[in-house]
Length: 334
Image (cartoon, rainbow, N blue to C red; front, side, top):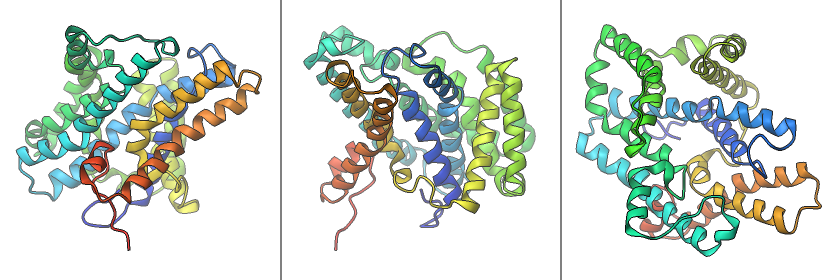
């Protein structure tokens, strides 16, 4: 991850690696979620309490730094860039999911058909797409498409905090339609916007990083309060906890998640397919293996098969292929 040229922000890389680890863990139950061992259920519920809002907040933080604070990108240029970066890979991998579900219908929990009406529905309602994770990409694209609104509201503090209040209200009273993920736009806009606020006000530099251990403790306390109050409080605690841990790791374990943290987007796009293969093998060939061993295998392939594929594609001088995998450009080989 780069911000302002080639300057890499190590704590942010660690934070992205941490968030992606929990995405993969959330996709790793070998059967129906919350029906396996207790430890798996605990990990699954912890993952889903904060990991996607954390990614949304990190995206907002980066968007402010790269498109609002210093960049002079036009609105059209931003939309073109994000369409190539987000919508194109989403389209490609949803087609891959279609092909797999049609080829192996007996192995899939959700069946699909190729009628024009069903295909149109799957793209208008991304949560019903064969690749259900597409909802996040569509929702994230909405956040970038709202750039003119963000520019206006972030000009002054009263507008910024009024927007925060309105977006919190929208989280409580979202639109009840899955059309183009508008319901999820309502519930995730607050996290993207808070990411921009944290970036604008430099809270990481001025507060979180001063005493990261205190940030961790406050995050744990807020998370615990949320368990007995509201999910939005739990999510806020999980996000704050994650920031604190990433900042601590930056001091003491700066290479944490080094093996996969540069490819979090590719893991998001492709990891689910590798994990699907492990789950099929578990049902047909690995059933006698210890559950924990197969679960760890599922996590490992979800993380590292996409990294392997991405690194191979980076060596191929064919830009369209790189774009389909969410890679900006193939690296030049000596």
